[in-house]
Image 1 (cartoon, rainbow, N blue to C red):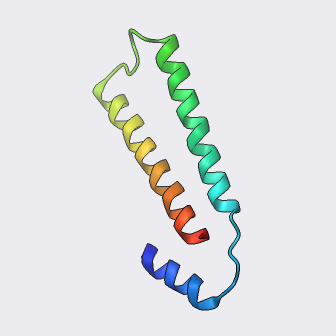
Image 2 (tube, rainbow, N blue to C red):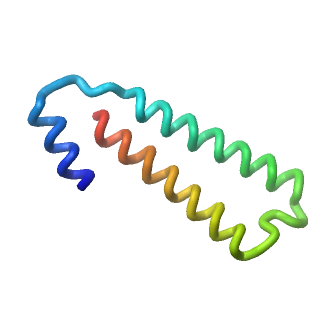
Length: 75
């Protein structure tokens, strides 16, 4: 689907906005800072469970994919 969106944007020939990429990148950077602060402040208890660890990893992966997709679409 991502490839299809890239092809559609290329066919249209319009200059795409880079705003979605900037937003996705900023959200990813903010998430990384927040997680590092939580990890440093709660070094003994973060993450407190395997479920919380999976959730953090899953959310980080989702944000990375969103930033990459926004970069490809806006390029």
